[in-house]
Length: 240
Image (cartoon, rainbow, N blue to C red):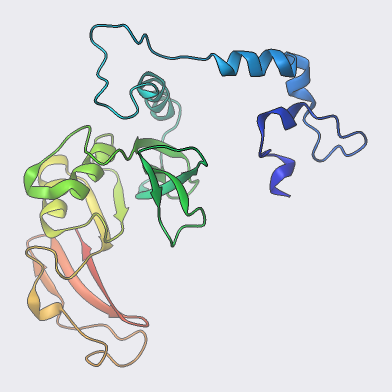
């Protein structure tokens, strides 16, 4: 059923499926011929390779003008709800690319990794950044690479929003920075080996025996709360 809307190959959008109206996409045939579209696609180019100010050290410099155009438009035409989330997604590709990644736990294992800021209710993408093995925007040494990646997406948030993050990004310093500098609240799981995370909350399975148990000795420092909750294994949280 997925291929009824999203075709695996571009030319299949022009396929005449006869009476099978569910998978038929007549709109493409009415705009232009298939061969004309494929010809334009073959020679489509977004940058001037001979421009003096072209930064070819950027691994996606050929796509950068396109991304810099569409992401601001995503934000201009949609107002998110209070709860927004930051996570990573995979753009499937079979090409040979230096930025191609393998993540075993994703539904799409091989592809281009993208960090995305999304509206939690609708899933609408508000902002994003293609992973190229370096931080291309705001970078703060004390927050590390992952914290800086989150800040790139969170720059468009304000005090009306609550950002939900997973443990890949979160740290004590990051949550303090989000609230002190940007007045943005944050909630998320955290790795216990993160700097400044309290040692007394590093629980093992034997310390919290039953599923649903919560460590009553949670800690509050200023406006930051740290606690442990038992699922199949202890899960550590940070929240402002």
